[in-house]
Image 1 (spheres, one colour):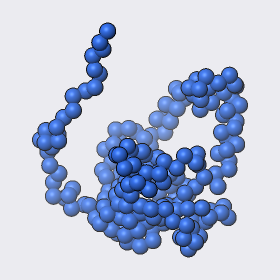
Image 2 (cartoon, helix red, strand yellow):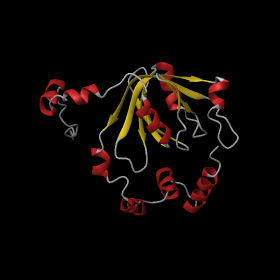
Image 3 (cartoon, helix red, strand yellow):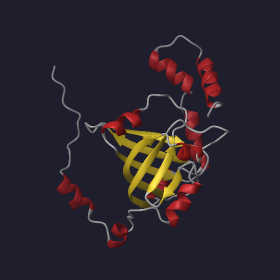
Length: 209
């Protein structure tokens, strides 16, 4: 039996532009090639960002990064440094950057509807002076990502307004989902108590650094 394809029709680039229209002059002018004082203040208050990278074949990855507000350091007007804190050790971002040094960052500040987008190129460093600036809980990271800024601009708050991300009532959505332990046992067919997995995760989360 032949199954019909469920792949939606792609819209050609020229048709996309025709439907969306062109940005106004102010929108185009908001893109900077450096970190100004307003961007610097936003970064200093941000405890969370998402990091987008892609390998040489264009296979994309987006991962979260978080720590105390201001964990990303502005080294100068064209350079940022992001500490690499302990995680799952898969290192997708590092693998991608070894093949394709392009990077995209999206900074968030809790309660702020606008976000900060930064695009550029990145590479890992173990420079002691850089790592020392990121010392937390008496530990410096093993590595940091240096980001050479090509574009920086604020993104309007429509997406966060529509998502109601900062609305406390939205947190009730988590109650409708299974716990992490229940998800893992279902996905991998594990014959273990989900609560045991949850307790293991909590133990790991307490060792953030």
